[in-house]
Amino acid sequence: MSVLNVTFMSYVLGMQSSAVVILPQSAPDKPAQKPYKTLYLLHGLSDDHTAWTRWTSIERYANERSIAVVMPCAHRSFYSDRKNGGKYFEFVSDEMLRIMEEMFPLSGKREDRYAAGLSMGGYGAMKLGLSCPEKFSVAASLSGALDVLKILENGVIGSEFTYVFADTKESRQKNDEEIQGRVSSFLCGRGGSRCGRRYKRRSRPAARAVFSRQSLCG
Figure 1 (cartoon, rainbow, N blue to C red):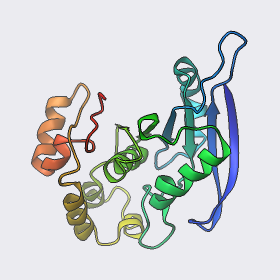
Figure 2 (figure 1 turned 45 degrees about the vertical axis):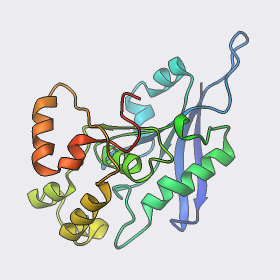
Figure 3 (figure 1 turned 180 degrees about the vertical axis):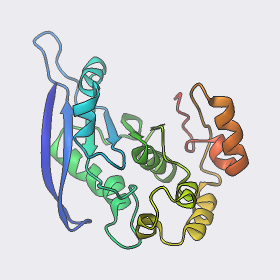
Figure 4 (figure 1 turned 90 degrees about the vertical axis):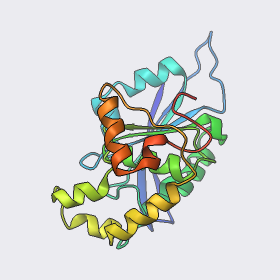
């Protein structure tokens, strides 16, 4: 595998941005199959784009499956178009895909693109899956910070969220309306029964789905 640290200009953000990219590498007896299936792997609130390669075995996992992995830097943006700041959702959902697929032999097919993330990145991955089902075939949220309104109510991060989401009640209503009709299945881990009850109570559409036309098992 090749691990590359990439710096590039984001015209959407109006600044230089960074990503770590893992690419399959051909062996004498096993040529790499191009274009590569690609996992877009998103970091959490207190991490950056280097965290996955520093603290996990993502390179080994990618090598076992012969896939590329793109890990972009999104700062503390919640992968959203900030009310007072950069358009990070437009960046990760559109511009970054184009830039990475121009630079590297990555597949642009929906069935070859996957999104996943941890905590804040889990929120971003689900947002990509729900908002862009025509671009991503699978989305996975690992300990995802999905209930943004609840986090704000608990005062865990406080006023910082208002710079991202502004009016949270208005945003929550808008999000619920957008989710309707797009979702098809929702899977949990060991705590699945508790998770299912919680999300059915708080957001019935989210309990039924990840995104339209494609379950996490697909």
